[in-house]
Structure formats: structure tokens, C-alpha cells
Length: 350
Image 1 (cartoon, helix red, strand yellow):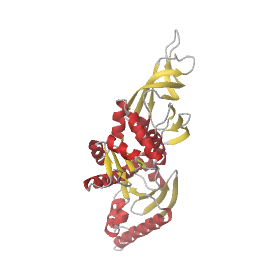
Image 2 (cartoon, one colour; image 1 turned 135 degrees about the vertical axis):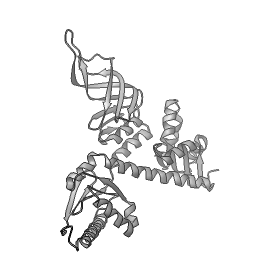
Image 3 (cartoon, rainbow, N blue to C red; image 1 turned 120 degrees about the vertical axis):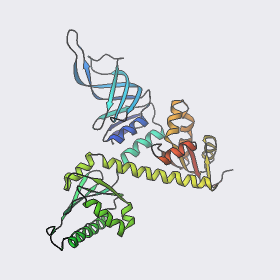
Image 4 (cartoon, rainbow, N blue to C red; image 1 turned 45 degrees about the vertical axis):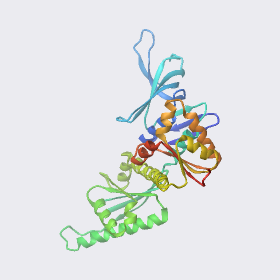
């Protein structure tokens, strides 16, 4: 997601949707009563003429949010409060949000959770090292905020019936591994993607697994139909990058939940449940505040989010780290079922 403009004091954020994962983020930050505006299409009817669909800029007050996961469309429905003269105010319109669109979201106030969720979505871009290879060519690229081709290595291999071919292929894989390690040292990527057509990527991974398990653990394997930069672009267009980023976030969140539950099992410096966590936050004893997004959704729907929002605000005032845990993975669901709110403490406040 690209945040084009933000002014939380005035309650206005303009953003561009880059991928399907962004739709899930927007669903978490838009609430009934918010104002959403952007370019959209609508059938305009004029007296005595058949309606025609045209592009218009509309502003609606949100009444309903629906995420159609099967087709990856986020539908935002509400009454039109601003638009061109040929669009009646007060009539209903729905924005079908999808990658590529720009929208403006206006709120009376952005909660700390909404702000953190939005900013986290923009920071989610990891530095990724991508290697796309086949049996005789390996292209290395770096993806951060943009894509940069590093270089392509071409192997000079003999014909398949040449007895020296097997050794030459092994040498080729060893050279690619050496290149990978050099690029990792120079660029410090968080994750590595190895992909390509055929079996070369799989064979390379087998060699890496036998030689360097730490390196192997950082690698995400994928398939492409092309080699070179065409293969890199294919990965991006196929959504593989979003999958790697999502997996990385799951790993980080799972580690936070695991640390908290270990502290609980050892009866160490922890608090859980709204009441106990509120006491700990008020005492300034919280080191890390952990909140399930499932609990946030529940309390919003029941109009009881204010109490939790006060806890978050107070935690931030006392310099506590605040972590929001998704329910879209096993550890996140486990934490949600545990109660959805917990804290790792600096000291025993009682």
C-alpha cells in the first residue's frame, strides 16, 4: 500500500491499493460512519435517455463493508454526500476496491490501532533477494521499494552426453550459492526467493539444504514460466511477494504469542484479561501490550471499543510496545481464544 497523504489530526488519509493484502488492511481500518471518496463508475440516467456508465468522483458516508475474498474485492456501500450535479445526493453507491485504485478515507479521529495498522501496511515491504534460474542461467534481483536487476550469471555447460556435464552442473550450483551468499552479505535482505522453470531451483535448494541449513531457512521457493527479469516480474504479478511478506508477519506474530504464553506457563511477569491488563497499564508496569485483532473487531461491533482504546493510549504514554495479532493464523487464533489481550510486564506492580 502506498500512503500518498496523511493528516491524522485532520482525519484525512489518501492511499493507493497495491495488492490483495491491502484490501484486508483497509477492511480493518474503515468503520461505519467514515467518509470514503475516489474515482468510480456509475450509471447516469437522463430523462428520455438510456442510462450510460461514466467515470465520476464521489464521496460516500459508509454504512456497510463487505470483503468478497473469493474474488478479492472489498465493497464499501454508503450514501452519496458529494458528487457531480447529475448524481443525486442521498442515493446509494458502492465502491468496489481492488489493486490499482486510489481512495481518500476521512474519520472524526483515527484510533492508535487504525494508525498503526495503516502505517504497518506501508512499512511491510521487505528487502527481498530474488534468484530466478534454469539449468544454465541465474538472474539475481533486489526488491525493496522497487526492483533492481543485480546481474545474470551464464553457465557454460557441455552437451548432455558429455561425461563432464554432471560435474559442471554441480560447479554451476556452487557458483550460484557463492553469489547468493555474497549478495546477502552486501545487501542484507530479510528473505530470499528462489524460483524458475523446470527442476533447477529445486536441485539448487537440495544442495543448499545439505550445506547451509540457516540459509535454507530464509528461502521461499516458487515456480515461474520464465527466466531472467521476465521471471522476476512474473513473481511480482502472481502475488508471490505478498505471500512472502504475509508469511514473515505470521512468523513475527507467532513469536510474540509464543513468548507471552511461555511466560504465562511459568507464572512470570504477565497480565491477561481486560481488567488485569488495565490495572497493569495504569501502574506503568507494561513492557509489551498484545491485542488480538479479533477482540478489536468484537468490541467495535458491540460498541465497547472505547475501553480498549483507553488502554492502548495509556500503554503508549508509558512507552510500552504495542503489538496487534491477526487471527488469520494458528497462533493468532490461539491467542484470541485465550482472551485476546495480554501484557508482558516490566515488574510486578502488586
